Amino acid sequence: MKIFVVNSGSSSLKYQLLDMDSGVVMTTGLVERIGDAMGKVSQKSWPGTEREAEVEREVAFPDHRAAMHTVVELVTGADTGVIASSAEIDAIGHRVVQGGETLFKSTLIDDDVVEKIRENCHLSPLHNPANLVGIEVARELFAGVPQVAVFDTEFHQTMPAEAFMYPIPYELYEELKIRRYGFHGTSHRYVAQQAAAMLGKAEDDVNLVTLHLGNGCSMAAVRGGKCIDTSMGLTPLAGVMMGTRSGDIDPAILPFLMKEKGLSMDEVDSILNKQSGLKGICGMNDMRDIHAAAEKGDKKAALAVDMFVYRIKKYIGAYYAVTGPLDALVFTAGIGENDEIVRARVCANLEHLGISIDPARNAGRKKVATAVQADGSKVAILVIPTNEELAIAKATLSVLK
Image 1 (cartoon, rainbow, N blue to C red):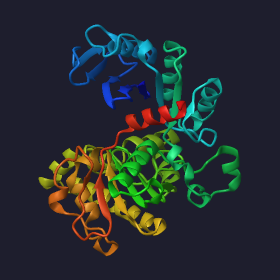
Image 2: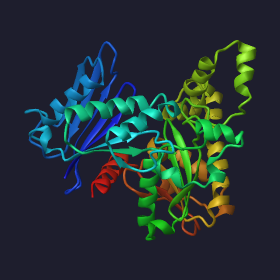
Image 3: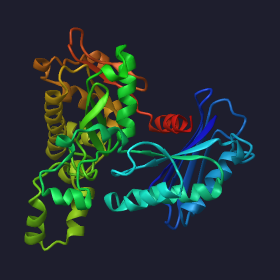
Image 4: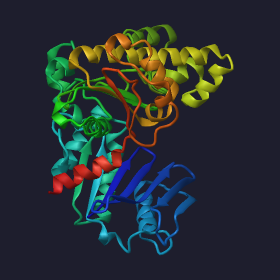
């Protein structure tokens, strides 16, 4: 069973081809700068293939259709491909950011599902339209191949109303479906399942706080294997501080900025999504650069790290309060997996909560799942590399079965 995983962004297209029988990732690739004067495609094939192992080309991609055609050519090409033709692909799994309240679990794509994804575009105007383009192009190019939509919001659908509702007029929820949805759900679900296995417990018997920390950051409270709260909200702007997003702020800042600076709503939205977070404080959003600057005495860089860590700590405390006895903290994604400084500082001085990290175990990047808690720590501290593509492929396989 070969499953092709597609993650279509506004100007990019990520993909993987997985052999589910052997567990091998046959090839993985990325198309960038779709719609620009010049784009780029890179592909890496699995070890041992007789085809070209790595490909990198600069090509113009006027739209996602052109990008998908190029991807198919690379995956099946005489020099670059790992399969003889697209007919060998048994199913396609698509990442879709927002399922709203109408699409709450992974589902086989048909015309009705496509229309429901389209209806939810107003809830995720930056992501759902791009996801939809990927689906529509794939349905044209792979006619007859079953295709499945896997939603970022799915794992968070188990949140109770007291967690997902906002304290605004109820009519706004009824009319516009304004509520907390949460994102990165595929990642949170994957690492929660892996954590249960590492702890030797059933999936429905673990209490966790999962920390997806990258350029975009989100956290989830997991009780009995199910998400009961998450930091992102109606949009991915809410929650902890991120690379370029502000995370939680006083909502009255928006009208204040509009009045005092004469800014439009779009301009304020751009500030909060693209010019805030780590970048807003110190001008950088790559944590490696920020650490390097802080070590050289850059006070704004040091402040950015302090703020980042502080806000994560506050969420850990809040989620600890609602999960009950906690089995583990789980770090994942770019910063969570690779930044020992952030992990150490997040866990520092939490011994009163039964959380104690071991400096030696925590040292370095973690390419495989690793326990880094100190001996005697009541709460496990796990670093688990996320694998959203594998999770999407498994969800696709589950729907087909």
